[in-house]
Length: 80
Image (cartoon, rainbow, N blue to C red; front, top):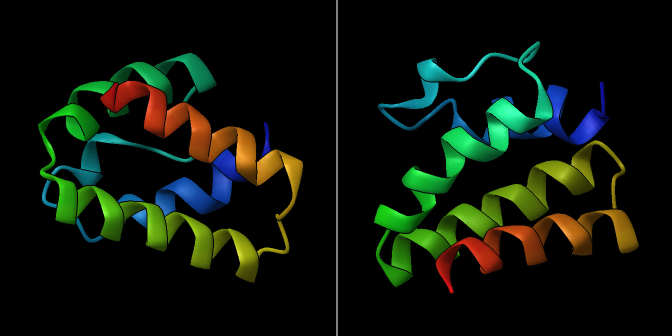
C-alpha cells in the first residue's frame, strides 16, 4: 500500500467526526470514493485547512514533490 494512503491520510482524517470510517488498510479506491463525498461537502475554508493538513503530514512523512502534487490535484479535482 502506498505511504500516502496508509499513513498520511489516516492522520489527516483522524480529527474529523467521520474519520473513523477510514482505515489505514483500506484499498486506494475505497479511500478515493469515500473521500469524494466528504471533500465535496466542505466549504472553501474547510477544504483549504484539509489540504494544509495533507501537505503538513505528507512533509512529516517525507512525501513531497510530484507524488504529493498529484494527490493535491486529485482533491482539487473532486471539488471542480
